[in-house]
Length: 138
Picture 1 (cartoon, helix red, strand yellow):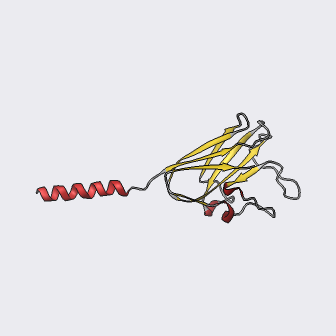
Picture 2: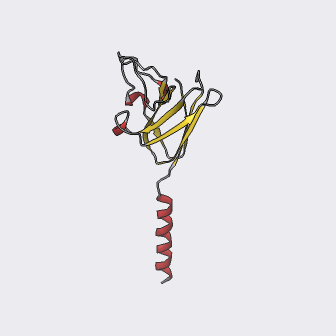
Picture 3: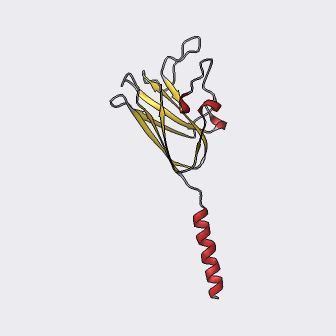
């Protein structure tokens, strides 16, 4: 009977250690030229990158030229961050008639595609489920 109790205890404790980690991704933009409007941030997977709603979204005001948010309870995986400065408060990114953005934006890894919208391959990063700090440049 003792042996069974010990085996059950070992099994349950091994399950506790095998649980997937979840962590926090903190995103910072510190080169904002205006405190007018708000910054929208999105955490994306490849399946929804700039095509659908983000996996998680955050909105923040700009204080002293800095905008900072944290995505919590994020499991390990491959993600990308996108953010834009909604200066006029219309809750969407504005474009010229030729498709050029009228509002500043950034993506993780800070590799902006000069010939079209941001690319998943440029923005993706690995997250191990602990803590990650990302600085975006607009």
